Every structure is written in structure tokens, then in C-alpha cells.
Length: 291
Image 1 (tube, rainbow, N blue to C red):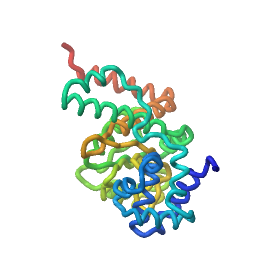
Image 2 (image 1 turned 60 degrees about the vertical axis):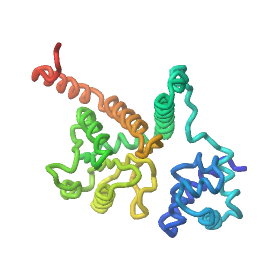
Image 3 (image 1 turned 135 degrees about the vertical axis):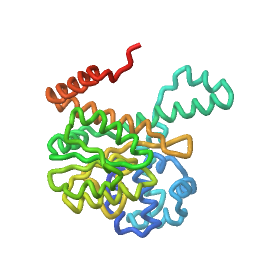
Image 4 (image 1 turned 60 degrees about the horizontal axis):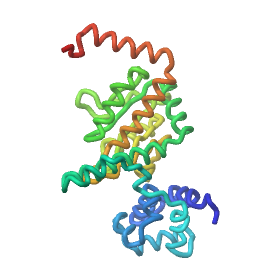
């Protein structure tokens, strides 16, 4: 079998998504976002996870031009990498598991966090990261937006990133909307948007508005497929699998830390001088506690 067939199918799915009806679109998006699970799970479990019927998955296979669901799934099964990732379990994990129900919960959460950090970092293609950093360093202005839980990630990225990239602005400002703050932006500017499933309406509308104005768009998200109405210029993918109801942000933080490390390194001497000046200012203003 052609070893590149899996990637060809994924590319075909991405291209087809805008034209697919809602049910097929949901199934296609699930396969794109969770290729390892798709290769691993039986059809009924995949249907349950994707919130579609098994018949919808069969129809999607037909739409992709293959003779059966199994034929669609086979390239993913052959290139299978566990959704949980390959994580060495240290002795302290076994110790936690021996400590009753609370220990089991803590051990499962710890393993999940380590796994999604690994999966998220594996997704960081070096060429893609370089393109993102070049976009940011060469932009006239860099706008950064997120809401609700993702806002914490945006705040941290801005707090550290502005030292290497003084053009970075966290929006919305002054209780306004991100669109208000993008009103005077245009070509030569970049918007970084952070959003995870379920995607925030305010963030999606800001992305659509930015692209209509010719602003380059960088997404930090759990999927390349956010909306059939637009696609980002670049997307950094983070795994957010969780042992609880809400998404786990440890993978997202790993992606942001890597982006910051590259920004600081490629910001060169200017970035180092700005960081040193911030540190000097904090010492002068007694920002740090001295016991």
C-alpha cells in the first residue's frame, strides 16, 4: 500500500469539507483531528466519538471514492500511533495508583498531561514554526486574541512575547471587541487567535473580519478545521484530550513555550536587550519580594 495514502486522504478530506453536508463534515473533521483514534477504533466507537451514525461514516467513505469504510480506515490503521502517545511511566505513577481512588485519578491525569504534551510537540513541524515566526517578526503589528479559558493562554503569550516582539497587542482592549481593535489594521499586520473546541463565536468572527481586511491569520488550536468559511495562513496544533469534562491545556502551553523560545532566540540582540530592560525596571520598582 502507498505509504503516503493516509496523508492524501487527509488532504482530500480538508479540501472537501466546505462542500460536505453537516453530518459528513462532522465525520471528516473528526478523522482529520483524530487520525490515530480513527485507525484504532471500531466503526461504532468512531461514530459515537464523532457524534454521527455509522451510516454517515460509510457514506463518507463512498464520497471519498473508496469502496468501503474499511478501505478508508486501512491506511490509518497501518500507520497507527496510539492516541495516548508513547510515554514512559515513572515509578511514582505506580505509587499513585496504589493510593486508592484519588491516587488513580491523579495518575490518570498525570499520564494524560505527559501524553498530550508529547503529541502536541510532535505536531510542531520545523518549517511551519519558522514560517510563523517569520510572519510575526516581519509584521507591522501583531494582534493576539482569545476569550474565556483560552484567554489565560493569550495573556501569558503576550506577557512574555512582547519582550521579544514589542508590536504584540492583546485584544480586545478596554472592554471592547476584538473587531473594534482590528478596525484600523490591514495588510502587513498579523492576528494570532487561540481557540479550542467548542470554538468561541467572538474569536471566529474576529478571524473572519481579519481575513477580509487582508490581515494574516495564525491559529493556535486543536484543529486545522475550525470553520468552512475561512482557513488560517498557519495553524499550530495542540492536543487537548482530557480526563475531565474540559480541555486540558498542558499541550497548548507546551506549544506556546516553544513559540516563545524561538521568538526570543530569533529576536537576537534586540530581544535580549528588551528582556534585560524589563528585568531592570522590575528591580528598580521593587516588583519582586525580598524576604
